[in-house]
Image 1 (cartoon, one colour):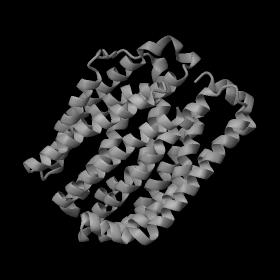
Image 2 (cartoon, one colour):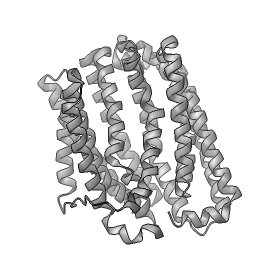
Image 3 (tube, rainbow, N blue to C red):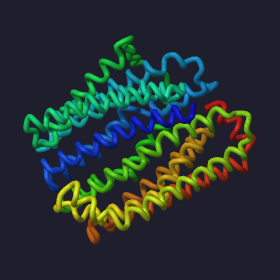
Length: 410
């Protein structure tokens, strides 16, 4: 069963990663470094918008479908409707701001970004339910279908002559609309717009957790725009980071299965769970070190080969970003363990400190060192995250009876 789940998830990720890589090559070659930098900034901003649209309900659906919390038991059947209601209201508000805001030169790009990432979140709610229920094979099949539809839409737009970021993002949005229609064909979820305060009391820390995490992981792209970094350097950095995302995607099925293991295994003492989390995180860090060592002799060759000579600089940046994986992969396991134990607030505080550290460091150092500051601040921020998550697990170790009781109720 484990092999079947992992095999299905890795097949989906391999397909998604391969298709995304091919699309990135064609988009980068069509746009060039400068326009691709604008496209990368739009997608980074889209991830921030997606967090607002998600509203923490994605994580909540995942956790509650794995094991229902006592405090939310009466709302268990309505959570999907609450999620849709929140998402619809947020998408409408963001679209209105995109149309009436002061960003005249980027209005179409902003509107297309809201559409692409907003519709994506609506589909992710259903996939979060499947993952929480442990139906990982079906989840993998839907992931492949969704990526195939969006890729076909983008490829058609490029074939038609799309050469602006808003055109590619608009095509992505149309592909996701078709995917959502297929996904919900057996019964559309009616949105519930009157959401109880108790639900928002639970999801607000999850919203902030996602927002702070994305700020420290993605804000450097937006800061590059605010600080007038050369678009060619931003494009090279964006291409290098795309491959880092691929490695993190490969690790996501394992982290998901570890989350379910930590969440469902209520009979195991907390201290044994903490030891298991630490062991898996050390193993993940070791895998990151292997990737880093393999990248050192190959990055300078692969990037010009696949993306063109204009992206030689991306290979140099990629080698440093691979060093980040040593800490990032380990932190992925630590974060799933902390979330499964119900230590949401400590996780949120860790992400907050990391966000402030990352944004502050980039703001001070980018004007001097350019994108190199963004690269090294990414590495340093992962170290900060690791320290915070380790402190949360130490708290769980010292207060094992309290944490077990709290974890069963959240």
